[in-house]
Amino acid sequence: MKKTVHVVGAIIENESNEIFCALRSPKMSLPNFWEFPGGKIEEGETPEQALEREIQEEFNCTIQVGEKVEDTTYEYEKVIVRLETYKAKLVNGQPTALEHADTKWVTRDEIKNLTFAPADIPAVEKIASEKEKA
Image (cartoon, rainbow, N blue to C red; front, top):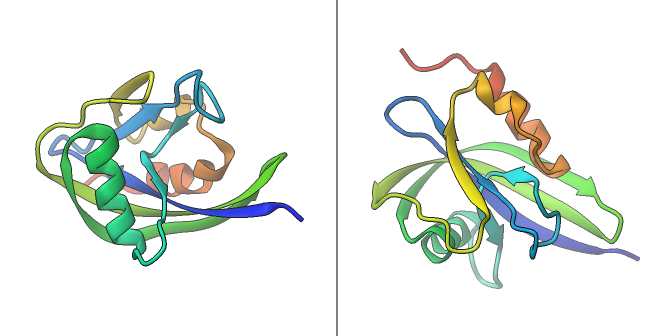
């Protein structure tokens, strides 16, 4: 029986309608895949609380979590991942990668050109198909 891991990801959007993406480092599982930043939900946390904590820990900035975008379960070779993605906006600071290899802000058109981890793809497709806020 494979272990199921429950994780959350933040789709952080800036004033230019660009979305923050993070590249997993060679030391992480799923190296060199892009992802929406986030992490595991600890016991007793809501998904929103976990996301705020993870973004603070990994990117040294504060976010406000908004609406849920997607809830995907993906079976990898060794583990089953349930990923819940939420829209979020920065309330304090700019994200600085402390663990990731690279980060970038991309438009909804550009996001489809990045190689995302499989669990992230349904959320990527949903976001890419949205119209940018005028």
